[in-house]
Amino acid sequence: MNPFTSETIRLIFIFFVPGFISMKVYSLLIPSDSIDFSKSLLEAVSFSCINFAILYAPIVAIHSDDFQSDHPIWYYISALIILFIAPIVWPIFYKKIISMPFLRRSILHPIQKPWDYVFGKKKPYWVIVHLKDGRRIGGAYSFNSFSSSYPAPEQIYLEELWQLDQDGRFIKKIERSNGIIISANDYQAIELFQY
Image (cartoon, rainbow, N blue to C red):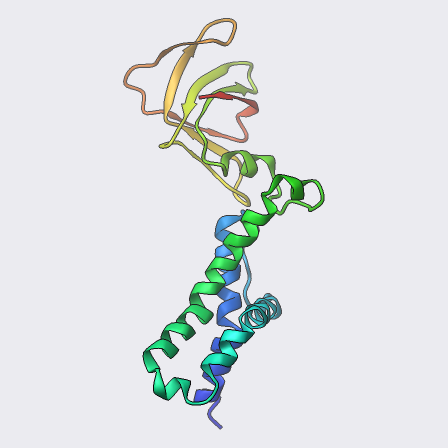
């Protein structure tokens, strides 16, 4: 018995692919543990069912009467949107909704660490890193800088190093420096200032 009939492949596309796409996009938008899809099959199917439920009306519309034979191009465009585009949009839409200020007080935020929340905004900062040995490093965290995200350990790359005075004020950029990478094992606190 061949398990890969056209009907089986169609069911896989309808009940697994949209959920898989949504889960993958969600994991790219919100730092989370790596997804083991062998253990997340039920979750992928659930997200596919949600996609199916939201888009039930257009799905019924394109499968009614002779729509597929009369409008084959529109049918395949609609199927592409339903199976691939919409599952990409739902996690983006969800992230926008949970980021609304009035919802943040009543919904548990899905980002697990302040590190990811702050650096996920992609904003530039002036930074003072307090090392465990008592030293301080000043630098610019800007558009060519980088920070790790969960589940990787917290590491930060500052694209510019700056000399600090005794009071922690930024004096001047250190010439010929291409920045610094600092590991979580090396610092105890990071101060962020408006850029």
